[in-house]
Length: 551
Image (tube, rainbow, N blue to C red; front, side, top):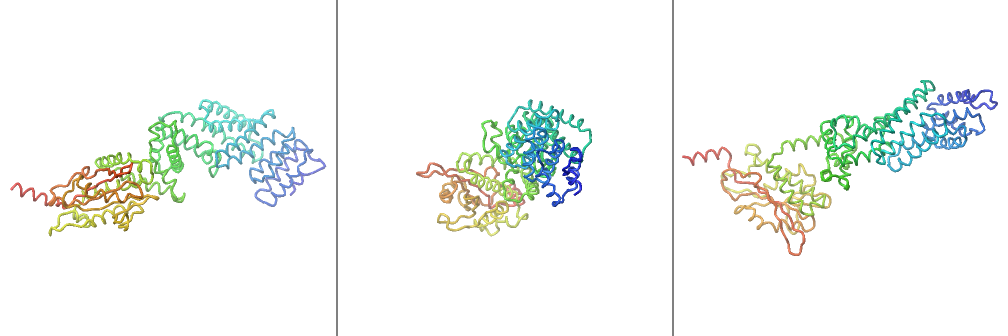
């Protein structure tokens, strides 16, 4: 390689400046050719401390750029040896800072990233201190100070002051370089400009995080919050997350979680921007906010501490492959949104009333699986009863058992059991039908969540279907299924006690929570009693009946 031969000339027939230019040519000529890279690496390892100072200064710069491309650890050792030479120390220290910065950028752990960024910062400080004028070293020094200060929780006013200095260094660097130099120098200057932009974005976000909510949330979220949250990709033009995200995200998580207004605005933004380029980052942010809130913090306001796990957090913790989560989130969010939009006020009242009763029990309030099971059954029971109250015989033949029969015969409880099982099994994975040998009897429907189970006992009542009578007749059997799992259960009753029912009861009158206290047990057992009205007349039959009575 002619360039390398010129750079390696031993008789010093060429000046250090010329040899440096030849070494730059050899580096560019090596390109992606690993064989030539290894020849150049061998040359770097053989650099002599007694060589021409000007040449060694330029060699240090090229060694540093080579490391950014090749990531050969031996090049760092070359730089450390060159940094021991006083005349070469400014360039070698700067390149050691850039090498440490490159390593820090790849760190995913916050502690490891902090250590690597501090090492890079110290090398830039060393370079800045021993050189007469080095705006590039000053830019990275202040930029890393700002990043480290943001991570440690420094006040937003101090961040703004440091950011101003970084912008000034960027201007000086542009004026100092004058647009001349090798191509790799242009890449370095672009990288410095990106760090300048990062400093400005972090300082701006610091001020926004101090506010309880934002006047223009879309602008702050898209151009500030999520821009910094994914700074490696959005600002530094990297193709993956790394050290910068590990430094900025913990403060963002904590700050947004503590400000209920900000958290609400981020959630609202995501609902309306599910396909935005930052949607995945927003979902991750919301998931981490929920984790922060669930972990608890004495600084959290009461309203933030009481927030429930979000859909984004649930999907983020699932075993679903990462590439499928974005699509799934949009589908499930639409389905949940449709359910909520169509939920009536009466349904909401029933759910709220029953949940308040359940929340007083430790098997709900202190057992995630217990709360999940009860909430699931409650929601789909309310929706089931709503649907069956609206149903007519012509809508769905499977609901014919709810209406008075011409021959006067009564349906068996199995028909309600099968009907509700088909309904809930569609929405609740892990539902079982008619498992035997539970508590020496038969349970009609059983749902599982982790190690816990909840049993729905299905009965029919032909005599007295008041809640008091149902409780007296069936409470003992229903709670018997609670001996080894959560002390929460459901009694679902087909009400056949009213023949030729003239009109259907209101939804809110069909649900009631009851407690069962057993001797020797400190905690009561809870039963949700739900009645499904049977022996109903068709609306047209009710009209005929009313006409007959008037006559």
